[in-house]
Image (cartoon, rainbow, N blue to C red; front, side, top):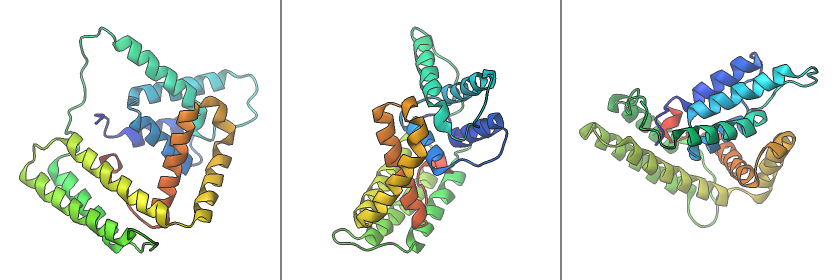
Amino acid sequence: MENYFNYFTEIEDRFLHRRGGGLLLSTLDWALIETWKDAGIPLEAVLRGIDEAFDRYNQKPSKTKKVNSLAYCSQLVLAAAEDMKEAAVGATGSAKPPARQGFEPEVVAPFLRRNADLLEAAILPEGSGVSVRSVARDAAKTLRHLAEELEKKPAARLEDLERRLTVLEEKLFAVLLASTPDEDIVTVRAEADRDLAPYRRKMSGAQIDQLLKQYVHKRLLEKFGLPRLSLFYM
C-alpha cells in the first residue's frame, strides 16, 4: 500500500489552494483521486501535476472559465507520474515516510469498529439473490474481528489489512449494484457523463471507464449512508 496516508487530503488542499478556494471537491473529483490512488500514482506526482496545470492556466492571456474540476489536471498528473518513474530508473532508493505513522493500532481499531457500527445501522435495499443486509452484517463482523486481531498483533502489516478492506468493500458494492434498480444506475451514469464531458479529451478510455465505476461506487455508498472501508478514508 502506498505510504501516503494523507493522499486525499493533501490533494484536496493543494487543488483548492491553487484554485483560490470556492467550491469543495465534487463526487467526480473524489472518484478521480481514487483512480490515481488505485493506479499507484505517487502523491508527489499528483501535486506536481496540479501545480503544472495551474501554472499553465495562469499563463493564458485570456481566462474565460475557472478550473472547476481536478479532471483539468489529469493529463499533467499522468505526465508527472511518468517523469518520476523515469527518474527513478537506476536510483539507489529514497526515503519514505514511516509506514505506520498516524496508523497505530489504537487509531485503526476504533476506525474499523465505527465502520462496523455504520454497516449494522444502515437501511439497505433488498433485491433478488444475495441480501445486501446480510453482506453488510458479515462485513461488520469481519471488521470487528480485524480490530481485535490488530490489537493483539500491533505489528501486523497494514498492506494486508488494506487488501482485506478492499475485498469487503468490493463485495458490498457488488450486491448494492445488483439490488439497485437499473434506472437509478442509469441516472447516476448520466450525471457522471455530464460532469466528465468537458474533460474527456484529457483522459484515456481506460481512465474514463475506471472513473465512471468509482463515481457510481461512491454515489451508491453515499445514498445508503455506508462508510468507505479503506484506511485512506480515516
